[in-house]
Image 1 (cartoon, rainbow, N blue to C red):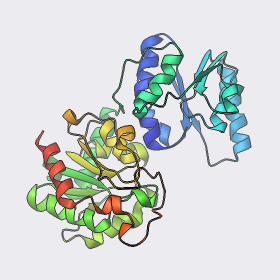
Image 2 (image 1 turned 120 degrees about the vertical axis):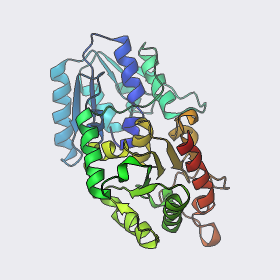
Image 3 (image 1 turned 90 degrees about the vertical axis):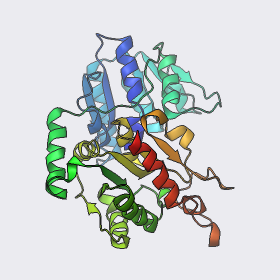
Length: 333
């Protein structure tokens, strides 16, 4: 239902459902901005955007009516919060699959219990489709871009960076994150950008969403080389630009998942989050998750609650040299 990374991590399940029902009608409902990433997915017949900007009572009613009109046989709820559970029930589908949760679990006809075993987000979703009798056949998240989108992105980069720059190596950096506890220090990103230019002979491009302007400016102001910073772009245009990069370095946030799903070698920087869950990307393709052990991990906090030297310790322990070495390995593949 929500968040860029969460939507991207459901794409293997989409492919599996299509494999099980090659002639079926398959629709995907989710937050309207995030689900734009699913445009062009050949395994979907329809995308149903949910508008969180509208009053909840009206949007829930609108979506429930839209689902009932389509007379779905099966609904699989991969989110499982009270709102999505209620919408699943109001859909009128005879079979409804969702997580076993106290209270709202009764709104599903098939409840998926948590076995307590460690698993990636993709494996978690695969358990839901398996409960519906659908064999999981995919494990790699994917985003589909058109040739026109990729061509326009290359042209945009040429305009932004100057003629010739896109022909060489370009490293994208996303210094933002939804929550402050997930952000690597801006001075570290700035030093990394300078070293990428000096030691790896690559151009550096900073990207971010509307909420990342301060993070991008903080990096750029601390950098000697003043890397290029792209304007805030619509999500699919951002994805197309990211697809042009030789490698990508990002905090645990949506653009990290976009890059990896597009096959761009991605270095994910983790602090309070769990990379064994949220980074199911193949190291043989140049992807790497970096994290340092600290006593409080995983805290799952949005804001670090430690003080003094312990404040943001998980992120402070990640060194520039460590990230640069991982990036060098990714670029050399």
